[in-house]
Every structure is written in C-alpha cells, then in structure tokens.
Image 1 (tube, rainbow, N blue to C red):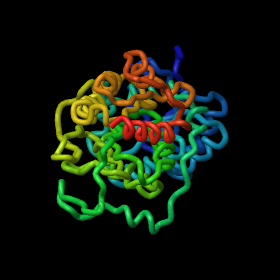
Image 2: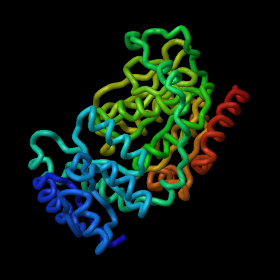
Image 3: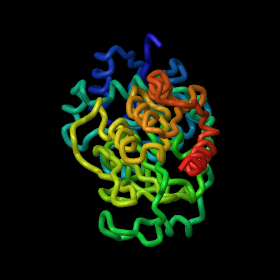
Image 4: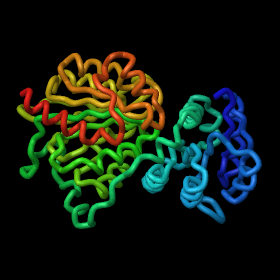
Length: 364
C-alpha cells in the first residue's frame, strides 16, 4: 500500500492537531480529524480511510458503540486511543474483542510532548493496522462465555508468589505462544476452544502495562482454562495460562520437577518488552522436547529466532497460516527462518495443540 489514508476521531483538539502533524510527518495522508463519530461518519462517506484512530470517551456517541457499528457495516482497521489506566485497559479489551486491530496509549499528563515525540510508537501502530486483513479478523469465532460460577472458581488465590497450590497438577508439557497485532480476538478464539486438561501455557502478547491484566481477566471469564497475568514465581500447571505482564519480560525456569515463570524488568529487546524470543529461548533451555511453540498473528519478527531454538531443542513448533492471520509478519518470519515445523490455520490450532501434547506424551 503506497499511500495510507488516516482518519482521527478524538474529542481532544490537542490530540487531533498533534497526532495529525505526527502522522503527516511520517508520510501518511490525514484525510480528516473529527471531534466525534457522527462528524467522522459524514466525512468518511465522502472519503473512506485505510485506518481509523478512534478515541473511547466522546460526546454524542462513544468509541465502542461506533466501532461495533463500523464492524457490522464496513469492517475497517481501527486503532483505539486510550489512556494508561486500569479502566482504560478494560474498555480497550472490549474494543479489541469487538474488532479493533490495535491501540495507541496516550498519557494523562504531558500529552502534547508525547504526541510530538516520533518515538512514541504510534506511527508503527498505524502501519501495522494498515496491513491488517479484516476478513481474517471476521473469521475468528470466539467461544461462548462460561457460566459465572465457573468464572469465580478461577479467581487467583491469595497465595504469595511461588507458593504451592495443592489442587494444581504440575504441567509435564509447556505450550509457549507469541502473538501481537490482531491478537486479542485471535488468542480468544484459541483459548475458548481448549479444555481444562490442556498443558500449561505461557504467552507473550505485545501490550503495555495495565492492558495484559485486563486481557487476562476478560479471557478468564470466557475460558475453561484459568487465565492470569503472570506474577514472579507462578507455577505452570495444567489448565493454566500465564500472560507476560505488559512492560516486563517473562522466562521459564525449573524449580525441582516443576516449571515456574520469572517475571523481570530489563531493556527492550528488538523494540519489545515483553519479548517473545526471551521467553522462547528459556523454554528451549528448560523444557526442550517437552515444549510446544506457536507464533501467531503480528507485525515484525519477534519469536522467529526463539521458535527455531525450540525446534532445535526437540520441541514441536508451528506458525499460524497467512489466510487466518490479521497480520502475517511474525509467522512469515518464523517460517522463513526455519523454526516452524508446521503451518496451521487458526481453526485447526486448538486441536493441533492438543494432538502435539499427546504426541509429546507418547515420545516421553
């Protein structure tokens, strides 16, 4: 795509002005900047954008309602614009589940300075959104929510980090996943179709602080699995999914006969924190042939090198296929670098994971 047309919908005049200037400097064509969705729709009917940057709280019509209307009538790549707050994270997760392909985070203070900084990540997010395959996003089919009683049963117990949960069965197998742009609906589609007997999972989803907690909370209410934002020392047990916290790395370690995760601070690795290669390399070292690795939708190449390390260590590995990816960048690199032993569609991935786990058991 040579020219990318962008529409900005935000009730803040500061955001509209400085975000327009930022995107114009980066080579995008800002075809409009509207204060609310109703004004935006009038302009969009005359000139439809390739990417929409959409605020959440606006007069007359909020961003979530507009997003749902847009996805029903004419699916378009949308980046949600939200503040770095717990409430903002929960609302953003609703938006991502409704079809937004990504989000940009704006601070409560220093907004003008943030928007003037070319290193704020917004330009890369818009480019990634412009590459999104909206038909792939619409083909995802998340499972139905579980009854509320099941949700409460999965609440994190008040144990100290690393404390033993007598009811949890240590996982002999470990599933490691890397996922980024388009990942919220995609990972929901997989996790809602896995049984409680699935091996323990460790996942890097590229997100900033606050957002992974909201994602885990949402998925914990939809899945048979227990889904948590990881804390240092958490055990990897059957039926449990641990997301690396936004803004922190995660790696796998052994503690006796068990697997646990280490959550730690550190510099960005290839522009990411958490970084999937950091996780995958640790899984290769700790779990070897007892591991299963998957690289899913996302922009860039994070996870490709680590997946190859896992394959070389005897793990079973796969990449999501292009037809079902919102953005095929990360899986493409995993395939190109030779780390993906198989290419699997999104619909086939849950059954493939369980078959790979059974095959690993037979090989043990």
